Length: 469
Ligand code: ADP
Image (cartoon, rainbow, N blue to C red):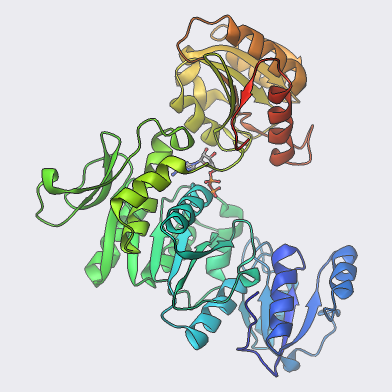
């Protein structure tokens, strides 16, 4: 845990008692602050009280006692409208901040030079964060990884000169962290997302920009217009701004060319560029989107003084993240891929782009737009296996172009897809769960759906499971 001492002997209000809220309350208390914690859900309040956290009704509290409101990132700060606790705080002139801000202030106080890598972007945050942490650990460094991925930031060990914090930051977390100044800031990409919570695209992009604007070294994507523009603006302002591309050669910076991640200096010839890693045949980093993630991760590791040989060997041993194009097992030539995290067509697009011949399991609770945007990939799909509520909608889109079968549930879909794939003459047929749908009609969440897929694959006779699955 990182005790938060910057509010010692003061009292703060805290709203939102999910995982990170609880961790934050405990870290504040451990650092000597008084906390009055609140949540709309009485069960969360009772759970917090059971952990020794003081709870209270912030609606009726005297806000003049509070030095800050610590808000959970899941609670609206501005859109669609400010949460009532944020309004009460603002009316009382009390600052509203989040757990990343508490970490930043603590770092500034106890170890201002402690290395801190912060990662944001619309897509690929978790993969890139996990890959950076993996490379740094393989390089023998003391790494603390968390934030929006896994462990809440204040549950991690405190910052120190020889310890690197690798922190995934959502836009909500950045919005609540006005003094975010990482040693290395990573901005992967920006596309429309969470506009209900950020109002406009311009506002959403401006929040993401703050993470790199405050960084000592900024690694900024150039593969979409918004990040490209941010990089241009920051470069004009001056500072260490490095462009990164997952798909094209740049005059200088970090980019992927012929499956190699290159670091090229200003005015350096391409042949002299440093090869940080070869990405070919690395099953945990398939696809153009992962090339982008890998380019950033290699660049971040390079700026942490990791040698290319170490980067290469770490990239090769990267296990990938569960439920994201995760190769769970193999039977003969057939591979089984769990992409349960793909809850919309945009994510499934990445999987369909990454394989050649697919037996595609899809369906669940449909999102707006359905699978029509995926039609360019239909020629690569040998057959589709429909599950869940979306089956009829998807059947209508596939009809006439892709053979399909309505399977209802995942068990039948896996059995039929596995049998069909075994008869395929493709060099490497893929049984792919990439549902393009939320899971809530049949599962509590995408993780449970992906775990079920993995269990069904494991139960097939003759399957060799990936050791990590
Ligand atoms: P995040 O943490 O930002 O949600 P993840 O690393 O968990 O991202 O990946 C989630 C999904 O987003 C992946 O399954 C893939 O479909 C897609 N994705 C991953 N990386 C990228 C990227 N660099 N660009 C676009 N889409 C990506």
